Amino acid sequence: MPKPTRPPASVLAPLLILLFSLAPKANAQVTVHSTNGYDVTINATPTAIVPGSMSCSWGYNYRVQITYTVTISGAGAPASLSTMQGYVGCGWNLIYFNLPNNASSGTVLSSNAWRGVSDCATASVASLACNNVLVEIAGPGIPSQFVFVPPTPLPITLVEFSATPQAGTVQLEWATASEKDNAFFTVERSADAETFEAVLQLPGAGNSSSMLHYSATDAAPLPGLSYYRLRQTDLNGTTTVSDMVVVEHRRTGTFAVHPNPWAGGALELPVNSLGQRLEVRSTTGALLHATPVTATSATLPDLAPGTYLLALIDPHTGARRQCRLLRL
Image 1 (cartoon, rainbow, N blue to C red):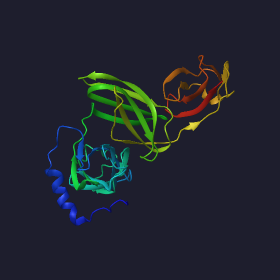
Image 2: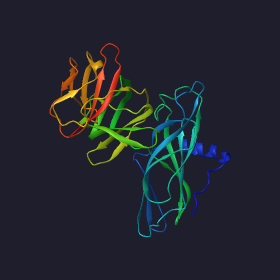
Image 3: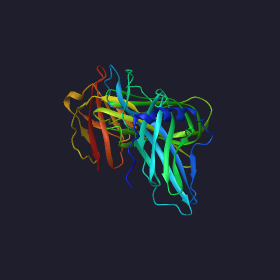
Image 4: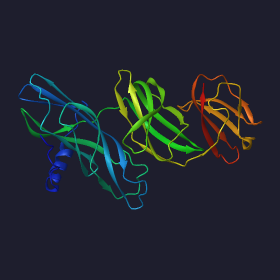
């Protein structure tokens, strides 16, 4: 059955009243019971703000990223429902989003909303007060109804998360005020704010009630605008995702070394590298070796076969050139 269309504006005001009149419950999900004998459990959490532009002198369009899980269980459970759609309340903005009709999990983006404030670079779920979610559901044995989905309690209290371009790299820093059963963090990166890839991973503290600071480096950032987010993974494998931060990274220069691929021994560097700093990093950004360049050849440490990132950095200007080295 096709998805119902978005309700007209005339019904949005009553929905807004309904959204703010429903008191949050202690649990982090809602379960709807069908008279046919099955249950539908819904978790839908606002996890990020996706601005339409990073230039917003007069305001900007944005969408809300919703992370969701829908399970259908019990006797007589249908393959799909007839309606699954909802609204996220960001302050007094009520923003529509659609969900698959079947049992599934993933992320969806809401429709566009307008914000008349020039804070597109720092907008987050918290700053825009995207706190409430209503989901409309209907299916066999379930009459059409709106249900409130309480927010998921986070296993960490994230105080800040920042990404700063620095001389051809991006420095990532975050801090937590508390952690519970926190296994590890994964920094994820995207060129379009929708498709993300894992860049690096750091272990979490497990359990902590004190302020903890973390830092990492993306040694091979994307050129132009890119988006970073922090994925936290529990000891039981459950994950939560932070708001995104935006970085504008200008492409750095390149250089060549010889031989490349390299089987060991002396590595020839450009003549104009004298006086600069040579860094060798893994593809995840870990610094493996650093030395001042005093000759046009260098001896690197014994590296395992694989791909490495070399960088030449001018100590006076911070200008950076990069190349990839294949170790045979």
